[in-house]
Image (tube, rainbow, N blue to C red; front, side):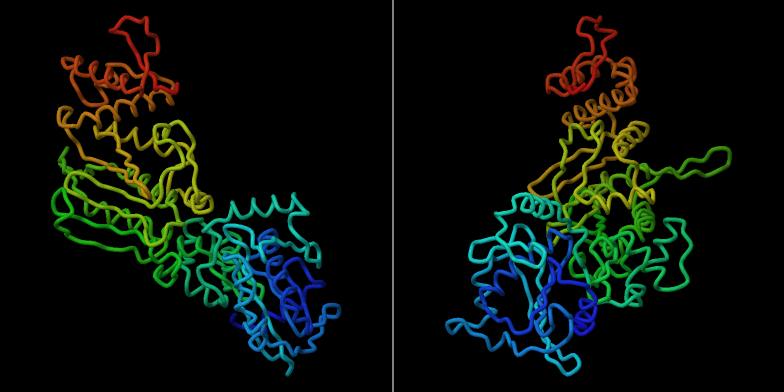
Length: 482
């Protein structure tokens, strides 16, 4: 705990003890301390505080600093040190830290207690909670227990601290705040206090109990100047790898993002586009460069990888791999929805704040329209529908370049047929032989091959006839879920 005296000074301003704050003079009963650590940890979670505190040396009624004779380092229970005894009797998720300081030449001891994470904290297998300034068994308050579990289950990586004990100037030096205000089209305040105010409103910065500030994982992920300076997110930088050929044996170049996702997203897209093949056409004396992969498709797929990744998976981040004939985009975590419903079902995100901000600044499409546009532009450019591969703890989207109909593998033809039917359905239309021929750029003379593909897609259970009694030449199809 940095600036311990400042922390105590801020806490003394509280009019009374709270469910997450207790003052003591010399009460050193280990059983009481254990119960209170348990209760305050659970109460901090209930009241959305990252920490709770027990402070020795302060009168609980007047809040006057009187000093204490308590020294946790010398306290013994049956020959065992107090801190060790507490850890043995508290559940494994209990986390706390003792520290002492002198204020006005009075000895003060502060016990900082972390909020309960993953499950409620127990002391000797009993859960406790603070009711006002009293410590009670949690099982006597089932409604409060339910609320605590709701808080635990909704705890987000985005809200946790990436770096603590910072001044406003430290925040300014760590953040690419200019990009933040540019993306939101807001004027930049002329002082640090104003800048930090906006970042705090976005939950990228939080004011600590001691009056200093902390940067949350959300802030570090979106706008850090140097993401490597934040241990909690440094491994979540975007990696871009280009290979020579269609396998991973010959790497041309590899770079790792140095800044936050939002602040340098456009730079990253420009860099990737510069590595991808393009074709030149000259019309009317003017040279036109056309990308083989539509920029809007790449933007949406890369943004999806960023916002839908599972941030709880350590040691892994989004990765973009460029091969001669395809681009692979991988992110940690598996989808929260069935990928067969990726066009018609609104997306669910583990990272609501991250996702929400990226939508607000138009880095990715509005909710529910992203994959519609991906499929639409793939069809317009005669690209196969992107393939989604799901592994144990990651998801990979494969975007391939232009291929003739006969060169597209059968499984990818079936998937593209299904996605075409989905796009038609959400557009208020139905898939037909004619529309699918146009999707693949196949002439009418090859309509039999398209009919065969639709039959195979139907046999896979992905599409169904809209009206089974319609004449074959007028037959249309809809997705299985329509």
